Length: 250
Image (cartoon, rainbow, N blue to C red; front, side, top):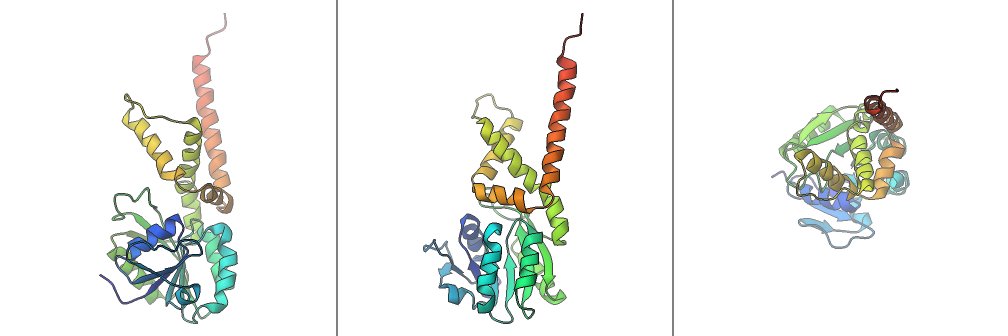
């Protein structure tokens, strides 16, 4: 167990609660939330002022509220604070932190590529993305080690690389999950494994808020391309099917 750094979690929404509980298995964790006052196991609730005194502050807030939160807390953080975020869109989060946080602070944009549903069976082996923004090589290596010690599969990439790849992995999964949910897929006694996997996509994506879905599609600069390619692919398959199903003319 790694116990030599105090983590402060700012924001206990659905993912914040989950992530705080996971981190508390390896670190001392305190948290602040405007709404939730009953902490997850191992997490100590504190005031906003107290959480901003921690040497490491992890922002678990929606990307749509991110800029407002960073502007509000920036003057109240300690000069040498390491600030992380957990937003699904790394380009926006990295840019806001770099521009709005004082130069004395280190910044590491992160994206745990899982959540309460997809990590129901545990986080071991799941991907954890690190996007260095303003952080020393030694500190980056230290956090790679710390997250690896939690059992995560840690990868380092730029924020733009992350957003491009995430648009065609996370973005398409959430988009298709919402589409399949609109179809109202039901349980069936004759369901194939493939059908069950489709329903799992719905379960893993639609338990998250509509706001998260909208944010994924709105703030990632590559999701418009993803949606266009998906629509083209659906149209192509439909055209091929129509061509083979249309009876020949007399």
